Amino acid sequence: MAGAIGILSACSGENTEVYPRYKNFNVEVPLQAETMPLDTMPFRYPFRIAVKDSVAVILDLHNADYFFHAFTYPQFKHLVSFGGYGEAEGQLLSPETLRFVSNDSIWTVDSRKMEITRWRIDPAAHTATEAEKFPVPSQAVHALDMALYHENEFLVTDYSGNASFYKTDKQGSVTEVFGNIPTEKHPTRPGRDVLAQVWRDFIDYNPRNGVAALGTQLGEVLEVYRPDCGLRTVLYGPGGEPAYFIHDGYAYPDGLMGFSDIHVGDSCIYAVFHGTTFKGKQEAYKKGEIPPDGGQFIYVFDLQGNPLRKYVLDRFIYGIAVDEKARTFTAVEVNSDTPVVRFAF
Image 1 (tube, helix red, strand yellow):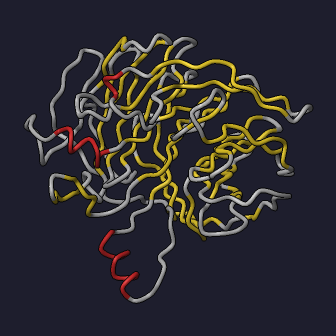
Image 2 (image 1 turned 90 degrees about the vertical axis):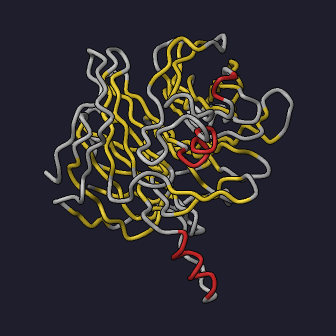
C-alpha cells in the first residue's frame, strides 16, 4: 500500500488536526479507451455522465440549448434532451452535477437558481419532465455540488468557508453541518470565504455503505466521511492543498488542477485526477500550443481512504460512470468530437 493514513475524527468526535500524506501509488495500470459512437448531438463541454441499466445521461455544461441529453446504453442512440437554458419552469441556469438513480429520479443542483431539481424520463416516449424541485439553503452561498443522502435529504457542498458540506432537507433547511476546510496553511478564520472559492470540493455518497467522499478541484486533498456516525478522514496527496494568489481582492487559482469527479462505489472510491499545473498551461499557450483539458488519471482508494491503485489513461477526461460489476469506466472528454469513451479495468 502506498501509505498509511490516520482517522482524524472517529465516532467519538476527536480531531487531531494532523493530515497524513500519500506519496504515490504502488500499483499503476495503463488503460486504453474504446470510443463510443454517438448517432447525434454535438457537445460544447460534456462534463458529467451517468449510466443506469439501459440509459445514459450526459451533462453538457456549456450547451446553449439543453444541458442534459439521454441516450440508450450501450448503443448511445439519442432519446431526449432536456433542461433548457432559461428562467422558466423546466429550465436551468447553471446545473453543476448529475445524479441518476432511475428513470424517475434524475437530479441536479442549479448554483444560480439555488435549487435542486428532480427529472423523470420516459425512454419509450422520448420525453423528459421536471418532477419536483427544492430550495438550497442560503448557508451554502453558491452550491456547486450535491449528493443524495436519504429519501428526503441531500448533502450539499459549502462555498462560504464555514463547513465541508451540509445535510439539508427538502424545505431548504440545514439539518447537520459536517467538517471544515482542512487547511494547514490558513488555519485562522479571516479569509476562509476566499479559501472556499479555490478549495471547491466535488462530493459523492453511497447509501449502501454510508460513505461520503470529497475531492478538491485544485491541489490534492481527499476527505472521507461516514455521516451517520461522524467519522472523518482527511488525506493529502503530493499536490497538497489548493494554492491561490490574491489580486485586486479576488482569489486566482495557482499550483495544479486536482480532481474533477469522484464516485463512491460499493467497494472503492474512484476519482478523476488532473495533476496539470497552471504554470505549465501558461507556458504551452505562450508557445502557441493548446494543452489538453481534463484528467489523465483515475485514482482508486479503499473506503477508508487508503490509496490502492492509479489508472493511467490514454486520453484526458472529466466525468466518469463506474460499473464495478462489469469493471468498466464510461467517461466523457472535452477534447474530441467523439467525447464518450469506455475503459475496461
